Length: 451
Image 1: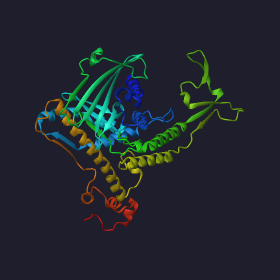
Image 2 (image 1 turned 30 degrees about the vertical axis):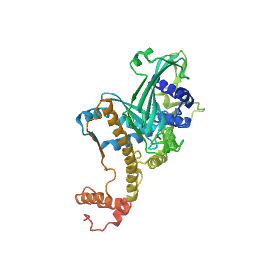
Image 3 (image 1 turned 120 degrees about the vertical axis):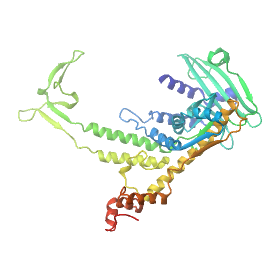
Image 4 (image 1 turned 180 degrees about the vertical axis):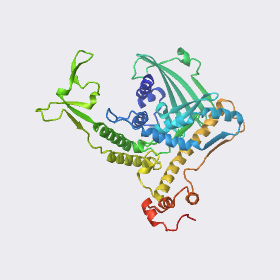
């Protein structure tokens, strides 16, 4: 894992805009500022946010956010190709889509790139270099870097460049480089000098290819970082709130840690014990060291033992943490209770409806972009399997169970009250925006069942 992280960091260092300009006479479609943000989202998702320390650990809220969105997006998705041959290839290709969609949601975008047959490679935004988008924000030119660390002072890098032209078709070029430094691309070398790349063609053009040779997914979030078409992390808008939540949990953890019972012991009650290094220390035998602190008590009237048990103030810290979580849910487009504790705050019917609508809108936008990605992926799979001439149709459908019609839900709740599954005061609290106590007080005395 350390080697993989080192290689990824190497790739980030080796491909500033200047390097790409020198090699391909082309500019990267995103700024260095955007590249730094992408790197930071990746670190946050991996539990390595810059604000973490020995006393502040990651709550992994980033993973909770993307996991919730990915699960809801895919749980009720049906995606099929009408041609059995292509459909079999497609279903195998997307079997790991949930895990990879989570990474895409975290880093802002991903590419699903066919490798031949039913094999695909999921590439997050941290590992490809966008060169050009069209007016519809479709990725038309992109570089896929592959780096091999041979030794401490030898690095091999292959650049696979996809360039799609509406008139000329798709051109794929491969170039290899060797470097002795982790800070430069180095000198270009023949592909055949590297056994793993020897069979690759330096350049090949597919004039009939009018679409990208991959599926491209991007988060449906406006890029306010550099104004480019680069994807923005689904939790970028809540990055500061996530930092505050991690710090707040650090306070809560410290509260429990600092409130551990300590027994202050007179020095006379401690016995010298020799350590492995030959040094002597004072301790009370057979009991845990952390429970004791030595005291010098003068006079004979004081006790040899004195207990220290402070009062916990955890409720305030927990309440503050839950407020941060609710703010995060609101900011990223989740419903209340997705990452926060559902029972912490009484929610009115209006709040419930608004939260569902917010989440529905976010997930629907993700699904629309994912559908476009999968549609392009199906075409790319058909192309590389010589099946584009077969008559097929891609069918992708998503259920709308997040947002249940209010009247349908209300009628279901009435049925639950009639069946004794829901209490009348619960029904009234939910649909009239009252607390349970108010609802119970406002119920008609004869109301046993709501008609």
